[in-house]
Length: 206
Ligand code: URA
Image 1 (cartoon, rainbow, N blue to C red):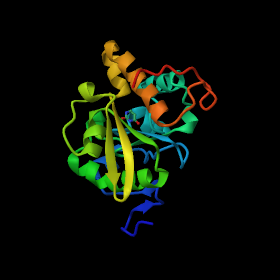
Image 2: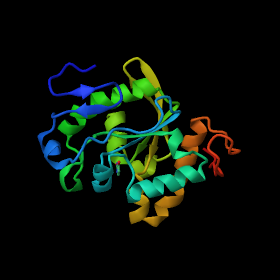
Image 3: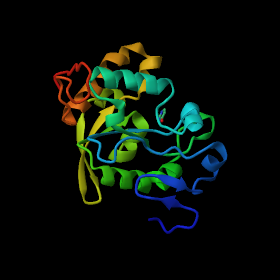
């Protein structure tokens, strides 16, 4: 699909890319999004951490455990949603991706969002929220808010969320995070009686 030398991308997965020299040095592998190509809900994180880099899947470390818990609580099976990141290679020392690295990876994320065309895109934390909304975001204040997101000619809905790691640093963020994920389930059309995800839903009054 991509004709740039050294880049292999099939519309969802990148199998080769050397655009970001620091990330090429720090990664063990490229970590692509996981989940169905027609998922109703897509979660977008910042970039892979150490565990994700080791295992090759987004959100499988401590943040992933919190996300999994909130998904279960909302009646969303992890296997039914798509989970991806703004950048697909682990930044050195877990630093934030730079503006240039985010820009280098943006086309892959946009193509993935266009292909999946979900009911809702949930941005997990400040970096993905700012990256996709194209403005500064006070994420704790704006968590739970829904925005229009245009990716070329595809119109999507974006739901701002705090990053699951925030609940580990600050326990008081946990309830709000769980409520936002429950709102994502509702926006994604999940049957809150449990027949879609199988779990107990706890929808807020979103
Ligand atoms: N944090 C992220 O933003 N993405 C991951 O995949 C893991 C942790």
